Image (cartoon, rainbow, N blue to C red; front, side):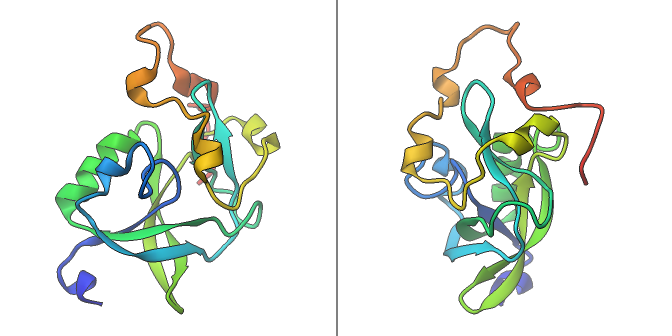
Length: 161
């Protein structure tokens, strides 16, 4: 409970920002609290030409997605916001996460303006090394500015929140 007294954010990483994954550097200086899972079911899907993991904010569809919980300072959260493309790409919302026999309200990055076709993709309980093996890291992506991979998955005219 000290995290709240220090006014730091509690965030849950479910994809490439987890320990051992390509974008962990965004959370490596945050304090690992433990493994947890979303208290409610949401779809975790893989999308875009770069095979990016997304949680879609459609409650009671999908699974209680597993992830990692961290306490982060405002600066660490700001860096994570940049890495996640918040608020233009992902949205950051609070969701209940079950961890260590308690439920915490955690910031979770979701794709709220998603194309409906993403709901037809395979839904996962957890993003693992298997799913990550096809993920294309930002440094390895085509340097073609005419290609906006976000358009593969984002519908800018709608929001599901």
